[in-house]
Amino acid sequence: MATTLSPRAFLANLPLFRELAPEQLDRMAAHTRQVRAERGEILFHRGAPVSGFHAIVYGQVKLAFVSAGGDEKVVEILGPGQSFGEAVMFMKRPHVVTAQALADSLLLFVEREAVFEEIKRDPDFAARMIAGLSRRLHHLVGDLEAYSMRSGTERVIGYLLSTGADGVPASGACDITLPTTKGVVASRLNLTQEHFSRILHDLTTAGLIKVRGRTVHILDVERLRGHST
Picture 1: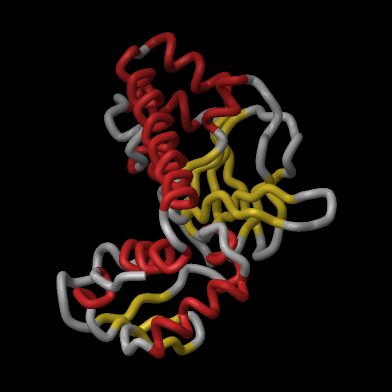
Picture 2 (picture 1 turned 135 degrees about the vertical axis):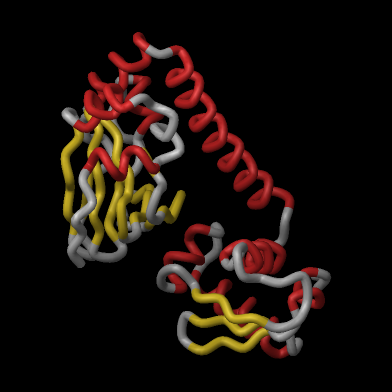
């Protein structure tokens, strides 16, 4: 997939950089490079040194832990406009996850030194960085609560209803498309693939959904939302 979008133009549309003045964007863009990754390509491994953070122009990236035995736990699945790597950049520690492209992707890599220099110049920019990291922490705490307090079925229902957040009506039927394979989604929800498939089967048997490949047809959003486990 080709794009004519310049690093400066994309940075200007990221929430983190949207309020920067033109000269500030010029400085950041001067320390930003494009990174193209093919599907399946590793962007960095856990333990690799950190010299900046990535923002996704198009494509999809998986952040995951991988055990010595090869078992994987997906932490996040990220898409266009989202960024990753900021927290460890500030901590000046190695990456704590492995990042892999799930689709052919174009990313921007922003150098750490450029971010630190802009923080010194602009307190508002520093505040936006902190706000972004706080949102990420809030999201991870929500995940921990779901893993600890909600059943597997509740996690799957919540995920289905949030995956199509822009298009899921309050009631009635709708289709959503899983953003990646069922195995990756299952790991993201802290489930085995077998358990995830069994839950989808149970919801199908209950007349709440129909599944065809990665497309999930929700027969009645209100009934699915109120389904008790």
